[in-house]
Image (cartoon, rainbow, N blue to C red; front, side):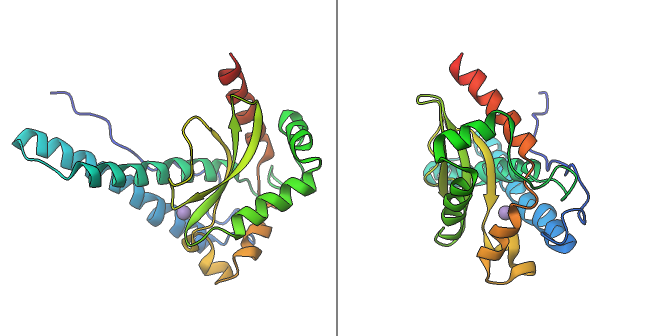
Length: 209
Ligand code: MN
């Protein structure tokens, strides 16, 4: 039988030290190679467990498998988006959005500053571990910011993520200790708006077709 594909850790489009001082080299390296890798490993382990159980005719706790799979796959998807949403300061990172996403933000929020404030409030107020994510709604052709708990709770299907900010403690603790708000503030200096704009256009083309 042909061997099936497995999940793999994506490479970062910049060096581990390139987002400094907003995210330090050590913080980024551990986040990518240990934490993101753990979700990849978790998803692959579950696939292996399912393959084995089917081969041996053994039953698994399918509710537990489904919950765990959702957690690991959403963790992989959000981290993969997060890395691409960032760019080194002065080399694509930071500044204000222009293009279609810039227009959509002003249309929805009135101003970039208002958007930034709401997104930051959502990110800072996640209870425990989670994410703030800018998403697109095909039904209303509007953008909205969602607060995702863990990796997969409160995230409706069919709302593609255009921009994600990881606010798990593992994302910032080495650099900012318990001061999540300082990390959220730093995020604005390394957002790659060109990527957000590109994903917005793709989502819109696909969902309005
Ligand atoms: Mn993370």
